[in-house]
Length: 207
Image 1 (cartoon, one colour):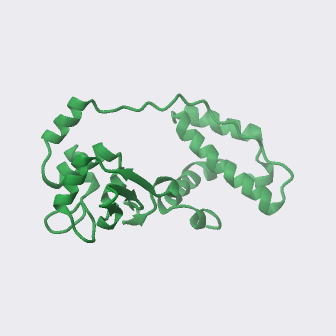
Image 2 (tube, one colour):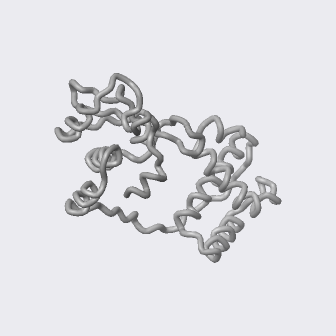
């Protein structure tokens, strides 16, 4: 309540609240913050590994407990806090669609779904960014698209994009022409015939 809600996006608040309530507090909650030591942290890691959690997930937990301890050290003048070592995680594997796969995906979609998938393939926008895309984000003279918002499903509202930074993406000629044919002065870009924004769950089904 003191730090997370004022310094994090809504989705991050929700995730950290879950990590605390479902994992960290049940394990560390009975221990005074100045008594948490490296051994306890190692026991926590061991138990989570035994429970089948992935190393990356456990590391996310460690990031939260480490932040709690560092803030406690600053706010409560703790003499020392344990040094927390993250688990080794293999490099993330990134898979790309082949050109043939992309063409097949587009060939089996139509209407606004085709336009959404086409824009995603050409620009790399995430689902939330596509849903939040506004006509005011398109610079027609410079042929660029600015990513200023992302749609947060957790609280059904606009939020900042990933890393809290705007991005500016050049538009290829085919994306530019597709958007130009749909051009409006304001409002969300990808809407149905009734002007409603698309459902990301439905998009998963389309893909």
